[in-house]
Image: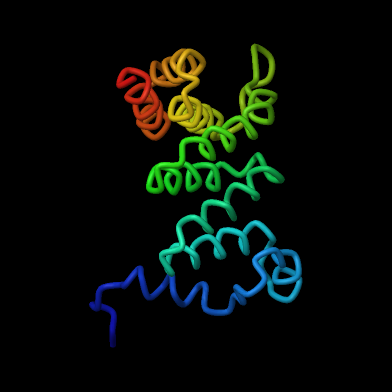
Length: 168
């Protein structure tokens, strides 16, 4: 029974965030300790709960604080850029992208050691943040270098960055 019923993503999202107490948005570690979730998972769920309540600004700040302390979280950066785009907040997008840039640049790899998985996608996301924040002269070569590699997701984000560069 119910095998042919369509899955409602909205009800799944609401169920996922149902246990979160959002009165204290800074208690991610306490919530993680009280559940089987990691601090990263609690942060993502908190942002999701904010978005479900149409509190995009709070979701943006939850994600921004998270990328400041966990610059390796590519999903959080991608979500942050999406929320910043929705709100039209280019400065938080720029600050978020520049906050993770050094971390990811150190993991670029070279001749002996390859880059870590996801590097090109994050490099494209950083280019988006730079471009929307007005640092187009830095965003363009970064986005172009990613675009020519031909990866689908990274190439799409690089194209998004280049659209901002060429629109200026």
